[in-house]
Image 1: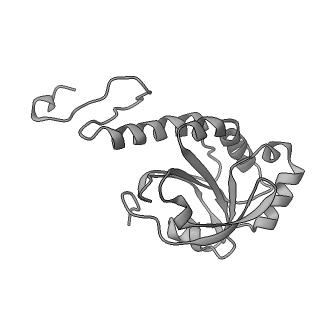
Image 2: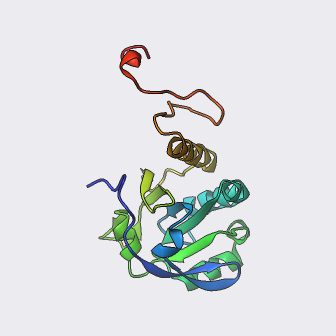
Length: 187
């Protein structure tokens, strides 16, 4: 079953952020745009390149009112150790959620049950806690923070402009479409 247009399921977890362990729950997500960025494991290979890329663009997400939550099935202790030992991960300012119970990964339907690891899954969640977009890639395929920014901008635009949609390769400021009877067959 697809999780698109469904509300995120309740969760509680411990995370690492700003040199501290913090409690995070589904209630913290409500009222703002969020991105859940699942990845298989700390101390791996593709994962730090992705997390570092998101860290490099975190200020842009923040300007858009978007909070980032990275999630793996590692513990919050492991996140701290990785943050303290890796130059790439050390620049992360967003929340790194530990999911050792696998509950959050199951809730978002990205858990590899036989391995206890999350797939590479990206979820854009609106202020009501509803999943508006998702992307899941195979183990060896890294994601791009610039494209994620574009998708979040499109989701925010569509949410604030009912009746309009963003076409392929839409960029902020570009023309949108207003689906109508007269537009059928004209694109």
